[in-house]
Image 1 (cartoon, rainbow, N blue to C red):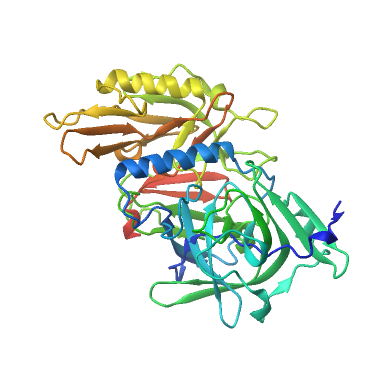
Image 2 (image 1 turned 180 degrees about the vertical axis):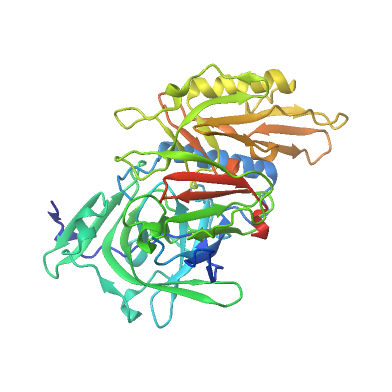
Length: 454
């Protein structure tokens, strides 16, 4: 049942998608259109050293663990799209964003939007005509200048059944109001609207999709940063971008973070995954969870080098109360495991790499400039139906000291924290892996690939 929220009629319009679109519409072998865009990483082109990148990724990952997107939601290729994603290049600390997608809203002059690509939530929102907003790279969206903007009426089915945390009706004009909260107590409030979205390719070609619903946010608080204007939900609920485009599949391929190249995202993935692939295509099923829009996987165990860690599948499984489980998340930098699993993994790694632990960082080991870097033990995630053998560069980072006195070899894994039973596969571990979310067969396909060549 909706509640009377007429006091919210002044709330701002919000849309948070931080991908930079560089995608023309292409045709897959099935004849269905695909939209491609480029993503940019939040730290791209900003001159950070590897040590600074490590610290920033660890800080964002720990913050993300404390702010797990909480709203429930639920989730044919009518409007398939491919978009480029790039790393954010504006802002100050920008600790919470990872990959941003760029697009535009409205006609006849599309207004730019930069939203965080988030597979852990559903709502698309961006700041509009604000009462209380965070600083952003360019002017907030002004829906009054768009000839195609429409306010979403209370009678729209998605106003009440779209997975919004709170929805209500402005009694004055019968427009749909929303409140969307996240796990860290941050939130966005405003009016639900719909308009034409434009995704523009680097070659100047553009794809336009009409009547997409989004939150026009007027009040936003807490953790949002200045490199974004909102969030683009890619979760399973009906208001997410993939759901509204009615695509059966979407995918992303993150380029190496330290290189800062744009990463492609596809809405309506072409059928031929072997393009630029450097390995075998593998697949694992999603685990259904009606309480959450997140993408859960069935993790059975972990092997470090020659050691299979002493934890069975129940440690990584989704619990009956909705806690725990293993998710893949574009919005988290580093993979995290429950504390006991993390400590066992780190111990097994240290015993096999045979390097001294850094005093100020238990994620890193000291290396000597006079010795060749030691072989690094394999890290294998045993998923239902397949094994994910991570490439070396997807779980360790080599850092050279500027004075030439040696360096560090850092394990890019963190603990989920005391009391947490959730496992999160972060985007650092997903570098140069083309990951496909196939919503039709309810599976995740993945294959090593040259992401910058796709």
